[in-house]
Amino acid sequence: MIFQAAATIVYGLLIAGGGVAGFVAAKSLPSLISGGLLGVAALAGGLLMAMGHPVGFWLAVAAAVLTGAFFGVKLATGLANGKPVGRAAGILALSVAQLAILAFIG
Image (tube, rainbow, N blue to C red; front, top):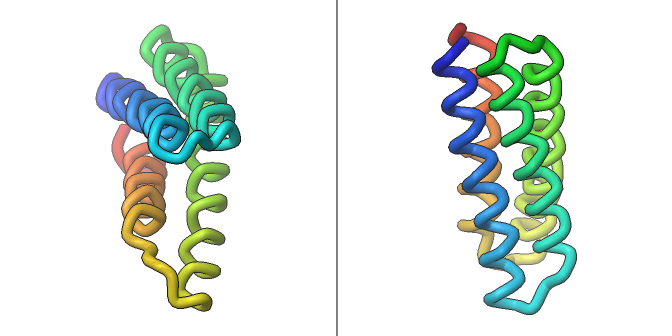
């Protein structure tokens, strides 16, 4: 469980940092808000898991699913429109990896 908690905390920091980076690069307030909220949710989930609270696991799962779903849609629409999708693919892969850690390592 401690590995799951640590991985979730790192994941939350990466997602929150990505939201800040999106805001700095493109002045995107939605990036800042969604990255901040989902990153804080993942961080809280990781901290709660580290303290032994089961709700932390579900909070971490929810944050990873929402992030993955959002970037999965971005990836699909980007591919359909011929736009660059490297960043969306990377974040989707990160979310899938986080879900795999939560589901299979414990």
